Image (cartoon, rainbow, N blue to C red):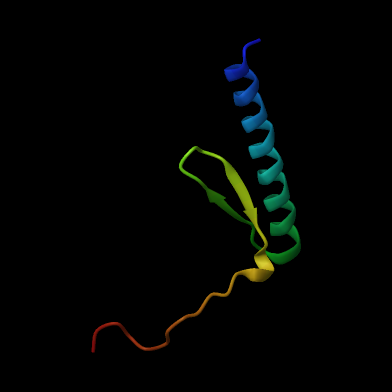
Length: 61
């Protein structure tokens, strides 16, 4: 197995772990968050750090 195949398998394993962690977050917090970089690597984002603001004003008057 060459280094490219090893790197691809490691990326797949790391991505699956990030997906599993986000899935657990979804069960606990009601949502799971992932970030994807330009190389296709997934990273879990802690849902407790996400703040969503909703503007109650209509966009167009």
